[in-house]
Every structure is written in structure tokens, then in C-alpha cells.
Length: 128
Image 1: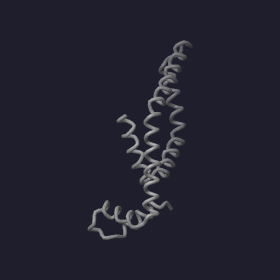
Image 2: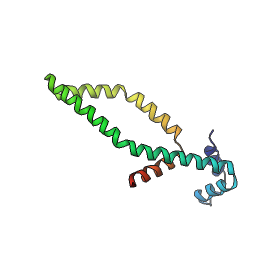
Image 3: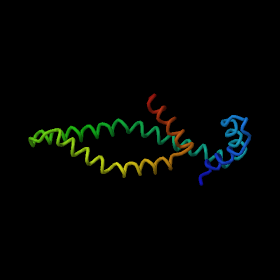
Image 4: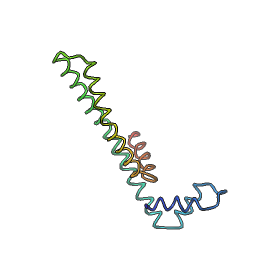
């Protein structure tokens, strides 16, 4: 159990009339281990988001080059583009389960402050 999940458990047991964010701030200021863990996870998420935004355009360019290469290869061999797209679609369906498992694993690893930091990092990278 991560320290942040302890924050969620402890905050959920407090008074329901106090807003959630105030309860969270109160807990973070009262326990230095939870606050330090929260800040480290937030920083890690920010760096992850920043570098993912920077790398994203290169990944898109890489995929575009591969797609253009496949289209030119099919065209040069005299095949139809529809057949190539059909085979590519079949391959994508076989990889769907692997991709869904990866996404769920990534979702478990990036909960809480890491996700918040990731979004902040994306915004920072897109602004530059």
C-alpha cells in the first residue's frame, strides 16, 4: 500500500462536512512522511509528463514514417491498400489484449499524485 492510499483511507474517515481538499491539506501538513511522499510522487509525475510531451511528436513522426513505408511497399508490390489495411486491423485486434493489460498496469502505477504531476508536466511541456 502506498503512502498516498493511506492518505485516502485516513481522509475518508474524517468529518464529512469539511471539503475533501481541506482534509487532504490538513493530513499532509500533519504527517511529514506523507507530505514528503506526496511531493516526491508529484515531482516524478511532472517529469514523466514533461518528457512524454516532448517525446510525443517524435513518436508520431516515427509512426507516420512506418505507415508511409507500408503504403509505399504495398503500392510498389501491386497490392491493394484495402488488403493491407485489413491485415493491419487484424494485427491490431490481436494486440488489443496486450495493450489493455499494459494500460491497466500503467494506471495502477500512476495513481494519485503521480497522475496529477503527469498532467502538470504535460501542461508545462506544451507551454514551452
